[in-house]
Image (cartoon, rainbow, N blue to C red; front, top):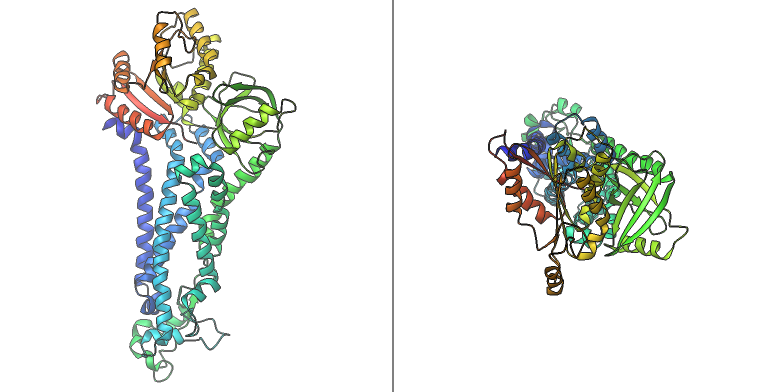
Amino acid sequence: MGNWIINHGISGLILAVWLGLNVFLFVNAFLLYEKADKYFYTRKILGSALAWARASARCLNFNSMLILIPVCRNLLSFLRGTCSFCRSTLRKQLDHNLTFHKLVAYMICLHTAIHIIAHLFNFERYSNSRKATDGSIASVLSSLYNDKKEENYWLNPFHSQDMTVEYVTFTTIAGLTGVIITIALVLMVTSAMEFIRRSYFEVFWYTHHLFVIYFIGLGLHGIGGIVRGQTQESMHESDPRKCEESFQTWNDHHPSCKNPRFEGHAPESWKWILAPLILYLFERIILRGYRSLQKVEIIKVVMHPSKVLELQLTKRGFSMEVGQYIFVKCPSISYLEWHPFTLTSAPEEDFFSIHIRAAGDWTENLIRAFEQQHSPFPRIQVDGPFGTVSEDVFQYEVAMLVGAGIGVTPFASILKSIWYKFRQDDRKLKTQTIYFYWICRETGAFAWFNDLLASLEQEMEELGKVGFLNYRLFLTGWNSNIAGHAALNFDKATDILTGLKQKTFFGRPMWDNEFSAIATAHPKSAVGVFLCGPKKMAKSLSKRCRQHSSLDPRKVQFYFNKENF
């Protein structure tokens, strides 16, 4: 429990504050429109549906204000840098940015549904009260000022009995923008489903940029002023609670009860979304545009097995830390698309590199372009670098690095940096032991960083620090031929599959055994567990971090960290 609080306590607090603000804003707006005299006559037509519509609109504005902040990556990197002196548990909250982005999106969907349903009731009641001939207060209020077009004091937007719900929906600013916003939101949410995002990234990427239409529509949505309340001047002339009973004789026998006059709301949504929208556009248009104009030189191209492309690049003024990532654009393939890739080089190197695996149309086209065109190479544009949780790896005495397939890339940067630190005899290195786990489906993948691991093996032996780096390679996609070949050559000094001294394991790691062994070897250490891999593995490792952490805070504690970008 104590470890869960350390790992997730701040996240839980932030989540509770966010939910609390949503509840507060909803209840506050609901009570305002349900109780305020200004909307006394509006409620006579709409009932409680008015309060439901306005309360959900308030929360929609609030969450629309928040939705862009978690994807302002320059802001997050700046906060990570300025908070470098903070505890890792506090900095780690920045790495939950996409999770929070999704939660805010779900909240927007919820309040959108409430808002639409409430307004469907509102429009139906507006229509019924305008057609009513029973002389009720709702029918009287609906007929006020409809014949005097020069006066904008009407309450019911259905100005004639011939108007239909569909007509008002598609001919008013509020109705039309509401339809457009809803369509844009549905497309963005459905295309963000993991299956579509993983298999058809271009569909997700292009559809997600409908957020521009969403925010424009949201800013314009309130201009029409369909939901109206009594003017302040009219309330002084005709107190609604006193004049309600005499609605049939307004202006006649009761000079103190004149026909009430109504006014629409001033638009509010733009006030909520303006600042984060400016910040986001500044990042994406100004900063990214400036960086994309900076020249990127391709100094080396390497084709690895399993359709993996390595690019070694240089760029003036480029500075990085371990585990960071960049966004890459190739204008000859797509002028608009930017894709994230983890840096596989070390900060000590005079270039930066990325490894790109074929996983979709864009990456396949990029790899094909470099395979077919040797010189000059296609032009590459770079935005970044941006920080990740892996930057904190050297804050722990013991680190567990777990990479699945191409998920090994952030740890390649870390291992390279460690190699340089040992070469330079860096005495500031806090980390005492590293446990590295690389899980691959096919043998060819191990060739990506074989040379790096071999160099580290040799370096550790020469420095007498063989126990510093403990690595395990796991092959999950194998057949009897591969296993038999490995068994026949098991007595050889090097592994038959990788050429390394460490033998390859067949199958998946027995995580309970691994965690138990590390807890035994380091009974009083803080162990940072870093994963770049699938969600299923993240859940498994997070669970074991809690299970194998000691209840005594002075003894071994496992802290789970996952790459998110």
